[in-house]
Length: 521
Image: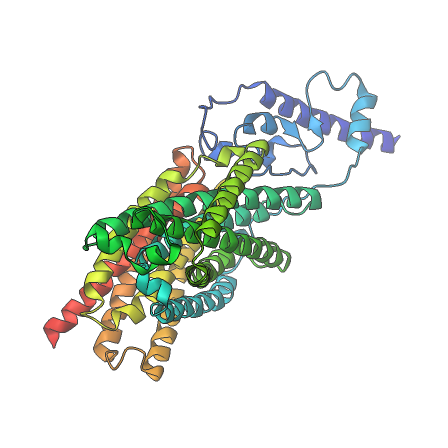
């Protein structure tokens, strides 16, 4: 008798909770504007269920950020076992049967940072930032060594292309890292079929985006190269690359074809390699209990830049030596066909299709701001010789720190959880110091700054670094929350703004340091 009473009491409890849940479903969802990347407000996150709406013992599954951004209200009206409404239970037996039904559980993986001590943040982030520093130094060394190659000496557009392509392609890869880190922390990569679908869709999207920016970067580099060319048209037609390609048409066309092919080919191969690296890094770190938000973006940015310089220089020199216009035209046709194929596959993928038009305006902003920073570097690098050694690591480390913070905030917004931003900001702010000091020690020991790195430069470098990191961390928090409040996904919009602004502010800050030291001396 007591067992029956206990069962009836349990059923009454569950019935009451189900009634509350059904009552919640009767409330209409807030209005959703077409084209929005997410729902209204933090509480209606497209990636989160509210656990207070679920019966006791139920578990929810967060939908993927791309798949349900336009259907999140329908998904919020579902329990993990399917839609529940007032007509689903005819009698007491159906309720008992429903409650006893135990399908394969789907576990929500909460963002590791939620319960993560600050000690683990330091342990995870510091080594990755040091690896990123090494990657930035290797990229600088590669770029310095290839400047004397015949292709770079005779086709000045390649110099312009390096900076433009690194900026555009790098931001797309960082966006992919941020998206996959969010999905991993939300449990979307646990199921094998879902994981393969997400990886394939995001790789196809990345290839479509990078082939597009590769074409744009090639055209833009050709136009800027033509504008900056100070010789006569005859001199242009008689340039080494024009003569090598044996074109019976103006020389700037041959240089443009060459530049566009090198740009698109480097973008395609590089993004395929880095995209696979991102997928492996995010999944492996998540399986090992490491927050992907802490490690994926620095690895992506450092290895992405290194791969871009290496592939662009190799493809550029190889195609220059072959001196074959038919080969160039054939490659251009093939690359454009690949672009069309990636466009078609992306359009057919309902999970990824909403992301095709997302994030292009921040890329345009980043391109403009970074171009201005590049002009500042060009006008000061001969005046301050240590600038070329210090600036890539200075800007790269600051950019990595602020994008790590933004990615963590985005993950918690998608999950509907909250993180104490203050302690995380303090730890990232302090992590910044030893990373830069280790780099400066390395520069001093190897005399890479040619004697310019004395105690005064070290001191003012540190002051500038602390000031800019503080500004960028504050901006990362404000910008991520602002973009989220505007119904856009921060994973697709925040990073290009942050990386370009950090590059610009870092360039201004370090140049100011050299001017101050010049006045002191």
